[in-house]
Length: 393
Image 1 (spheres, rainbow, N blue to C red):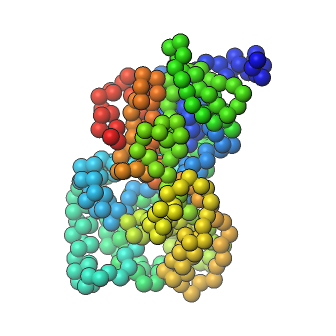
Image 2 (image 1 turned 45 degrees about the vertical axis):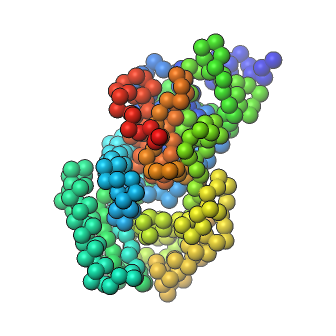
Image 3 (image 1 turned 120 degrees about the horizontal axis):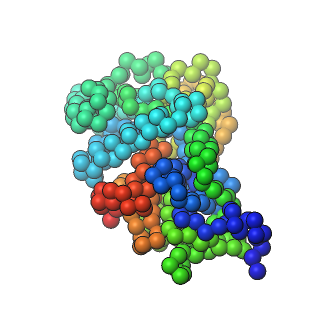
């Protein structure tokens, strides 16, 4: 016999048109666009944690567009067209956030971004010529997307102003910004609940089966859910429900310093194709990344911090970002990103009843609004032909 009361069964746990697994950014944006396009749909979001437990509230708070060397590397690996396609989705996603919410509601700040280039085995002349060539090439390619003549610019004059050590070149990026990840999730949560979406926490969907034309979702609680459609938005953890997907977890570790007197910089900063990233957090420094120093170890869904990565982050902090400064670490945490064979998100039906929107490759903040809109259109039968290129297969 069910432990639920009749009131609970007929409200919170009533059969739903759509159940979304995961209340992170993709799950929330998907619920928003599903309700916007089809207000009559009954939608329930089921979250296994008290709050989203992957990367949505455990990231670095970058409204991320992409750094120069990262985009150049992406063009080489996945082709120029796919790189530009992803950049356009990120850019449009950030504009959606700004259109829907006031900056104060998401902590959105427009200080721009920068990339640090340290010493190179190339000669200084060849090095700077290659940088200028890449900057000119990308600016030409990005002009149609961002409607700006110069997204990237060489700004070596700011190296001394920012107080960095061992930095040879500094590349400014006008399209980068930063926000408060927790506030963004809270704003989205309030919005979808105001639209009639039910959000249930501390329940993990363990599996599903088709029964009498519907899906029955089995959970870690003594009850099940019944739904017409299931949308899996658990990103790095999606293979627990859909083992066939090309997704691998990737841990991102972060630290935050004590307040720094007269911190000389504001904005988002990247290093080594974006594997290192830092920003101002008021008068503190938030620094994360360095998983390229231990790829195999960091390919995990364990939400812990390790001495290897944390010591490397502290080394970079002391030697490059804050040389000669006094500081201590006040916070450390990690989040789990969803990576795969390439950076294209996976947005596709698994069968007639199950869909997925996963593999954000560490860019979920910027990608989620567009991914949510696309999977909502796919599930409601609108413009489904546009989604073949986003299958990730």
